[in-house]
Length: 319
Ligand code: ZN
Image 1: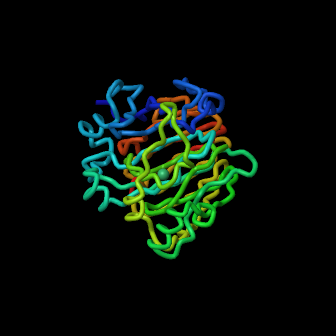
Image 2: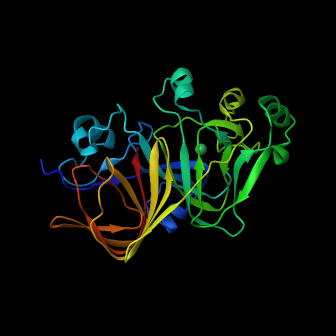
Image 3: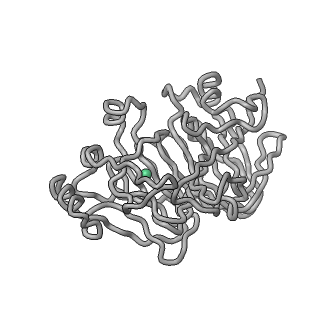
């Protein structure tokens, strides 16, 4: 099989009560409605599988390619594809939530992964915020303020701007708030415990379920901000910023302004999402146009490639 080719993926879209139309306006995706909240760009999760669009594996889901062609993924030692890349359009606020770690997810949800995630702010309105962390000193303190509905005291709000990056390890209380367009890199998990949903009702007139017990179980007390150090590498016509390297993944921002010569391979495989601009990806003698909104996997069988163009990518790989 000719396997030195990138796997371009067809995204899956999710309608959400907090979603909007920016995935169409900004990314030109054909979205199902004017309340589309999520584009699952690179996913082997059964709740939103990506389908391969090109090459000999065309039509297979990423999960099928993972099971049948593990050589493309450097025989990475995991039964399930480990990561998930999404673009989120939050027109209004997402619920305040927290995710479990692997141990809790396995024990209580019978799922392979908990959910550690991180966000790159693609765009946001002036003055946009997120909820990030809480001010309670202990579980009892958290429970008391939550029961009293004293959310403004309990929840910590942080201003955001385009280009900001946030690491959200499992156990971190968080919410993406309205007016933001975010690329999320996360473990391949769909377990969310809702702490607070602003008492709002969905299209069916009902409030969404909260999970206070599980939330209290998995939240870290007190909240601690992670230490983040960015590593920036300047090439002649590109800037690479390693935003994060931790236990589950590395995430980088690639800012290409011209020609990016061969990149030295030090990853099992790459998840690549073009978040702005366009260019041409070259592998050996083959050329592949890439543009804003494209999501692809660079398999481990590709040792060298180059990109020409003016484009921004978020690139991740498992550790
Ligand atoms: Zn989350």
